[in-house]
Structure formats: structure tokens, C-alpha cells
Length: 469
Ligand SMILES: C[S@@+](CC[C@H](N)C(=O)[O-])C[C@H]1O[C@@H](n2cnc3c(N)ncnc32)[C@H](O)[C@@H]1O
Image (cartoon, rainbow, N blue to C red; front, side, top):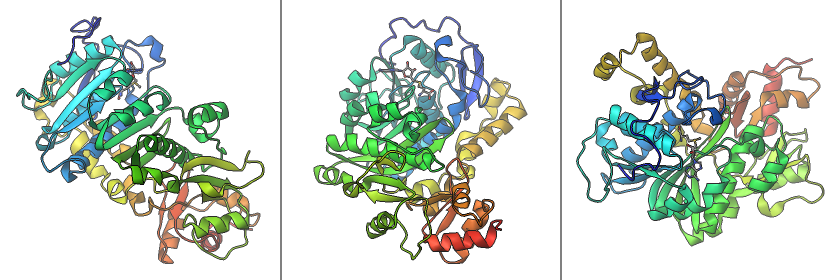
């Protein structure tokens, strides 16, 4: 299973710690506060020997579903071919182990997963967990993938050095804080077509609240209003696109999400000098409280719904080459990605049924495991609830995810003195659909509606349903 960790004991010194279920994969974690409690993260990463964050369970569930989709639909390979997957900052390798255990065997057998971490103790726990709770895959040795055990190879080292060793077809990048130290090398270590999943927990920088960090890490600025979650996903996508372009790669977003304390973007990267050269077509700015001229630019470039309205609007996306003059501060967010946040068909398959089927315990299918580990019924129910929660609102937004405009209802209400309270986003979306527009309650962390309805239609509909003077 790879090189022996230099200092990691096997099993680790305080093994077996406590048993925890992440999705439906058992994992032994250190016996510390926040390690085996739903929704709570560790108090401080300095106080625990191996980083395990139960609050990221939902992120790992979505990652299982995305890789499952990729394998079923052969996004990266010929049907049935093996896939080289890198869990780049693996810690206890729980993400790798979940892919191998929860994706149905006929697809999981195609995975060749390498888990890398700099920390020997983390890898000792990863190794002991994989051996104590192995996935139900064959243990045949694959000559092209030496040193693995049931699909998983564990390597110690600095990701930035090791990522260049192979042409990875799938890379997961899940750092503490920003992904910026790793992106440049990761994007050079890819196969011609590859999926890259990038997590960033420095949401204050991506939203613009930590202005110095935003400038230093991403070269961006941002206005912190209720559009900040949409802005943060676009800032991260824009940054990934520009780093990819430097290495002759064009990106296509598959899925973006802002979940509580992190942003995660999943993209497919394709080697193409020509496409990479035109990456700036999807890079631009968000202008807050835009002028009519700025709105006209957005409309002309297909980034804003066409319509006749002289009433004030919340924001407009405009292309990179039309950056307005004057002072940017307080009015401009960007540069950021102005293209679609993801693919409708990817979001559409993020359903509660699918999440529960793959990632929650089932009495019948998992009967042996439930018996062996004496798992109580309440834990089975929790696993079902958490799996469904991980994808809440995602399939609903599939229909509109390609649209550039989202309208946080509190901001809409605050623009006009005759509107005294925000409308319900569900009702607003319904009414807009009745009028023939595409609209859905958005998945950003504040109540909002994503739609292609022009502003005059949005505001007339808000006046029909919101409290007014
Ligand atoms: C947030 S944790 C990863 C959590 C994990 N992906 C999960 O789902 O539980 C980040 C990990 O990155 C590792 N790390 C930090 N810098 C690294 C580097 N340069 N190369 C390899 N691993 C590194 C840390 O040891 C830590 O285990």
C-alpha cells in the first residue's frame, strides 16, 4: 500500500479511538471532542493528531455522487476503463475510502485511487482504517497500479512534488484555508481531460470581507452584500480558470457550491491552447448598483436579461474588457467567472434519493456491517437524514444554474420604499414561471431567486406578492 509512513505507527498509537460513520463508511477517529459528532468540527486542528471534520460529511457525499456520475457516464475515459484518482490532501483518506466503499462495485472496481498527505500519523490512521474496514472490492494485484490494496495506494509527501508524477484524471484538493498554494502544480499534473475538485475555506477572502487576503491570493476585490455567496463561487472559478489557462487548459464548471464555511468548485479541464486563450470570454466584473449604461453592456453581452426598466437594479455582470473607469472600491467585485456555475445535468442528478441510495446505511444491503459494528437504528436514520441534507436544493436549481442573475429577496425589497418586506423566494419563483420565465429558488445561503426574467417583470411580480405600503 505505498511507502511506509516514516513515523506512523501501525496501527497508530491511540488506535482504535472511536468509531464514526461518514456517509456509510466506518472510520476510526481519535478520541477528541468534535471528531465523532455530527455537524461539529474539531475545536482546533493543532489539538488533534489527524484532521477529521465531521462537518465536511456533506461535501464528501457530493464528491461520491459526482465521481459516481463520472464513472457511469464515462466523462473521462472509454467505457469501462480505469481512472487515476488523486486524493491530494487526504488526511485520514476518508474521502478515498468513501469513493471505494459507497460507489457501486461495478464502477468502484475501475478506480485507482492514490491518497497523499504530508502527515505520517494521518496516513497511519488511513492505512489502519482501510485494513480494518475495507471496501468490498477484489484484492487482485494490478500490475499497472502497484502497491495498492483494494484500489487504494497511500503515499506520504508534499502534494506539490508528487502531483507531477502522473497524469491524473481526477484530483481532489481539500486544503486548510486557500487552495492557492497547490493549484499551479495540480493543474500541471493532469491528464488531457480531467476533473478537479477544489475546496476553499477562506470564504472571507472570496467574499471580499478579508480584502487584503483577497487581493494577495486571488487578485480580486469584492463587495460584501447578499450576493457575496454567488460572488465567492465566481471568484474561485475565475481564479481556477486563469491558472488553468496558463497551462493551456480550458475549464468547464460542473458544479459550484457555497456550503456554510467553505466554497467548492468542480471543473473539467481540457488541454487546448485555443480554448485556453479565450478563457477571458468568461471572466468579468460584477457592478453593484449599476448605471443604465453598465446594464446595457451586460445586456449586449448576454450577461443580463434584456428589458425596459429605469428603476434601480441590484447588480450586473459585465465582461472583463469593459471594466468601468473611476473608483472601483465599494461598487465592483472581480475579476470573476461570468459563465455558468455548473452543468444542469450534474445538478439534476444530485437528488436526495440518489444520495440516500449511495451514501446512507440500508438495513438490508448493509446488514452485516450494522450487525458487526452494532450500529443502532438511530445512526441508520441519521445517515439517511445527512445524505439527503447534503444535496438539499441542488436538483431544484438545475433548471436555472446556467443563468447569470440571482436576486436575493432582502436586497430587492430594500431597494424600494413602497416594498416593506421581502417576498417568499418560492412564491416569487412560482409566479415568474407562471409568466413563462425560467426561475427557481436559488441554492445560495440567503433567500434568493435565480431567473432569466427581466428586471421590470421581477419587480412587478415582487409588488404583486410582497408586503407593500
Ligand atoms: C483539510 S485536511 C484534508 C481533509 C480530508 N481531505 C478529508 O476529507 O477529511 C488538509 C490535509 O492536508 C495536509 N497537507 C497540508 N499541506 C500539505 C502538502 N504540502 N502536501 C501534502 N499534504 C499536505 C495536512 O496534513 C492535512 O491532513
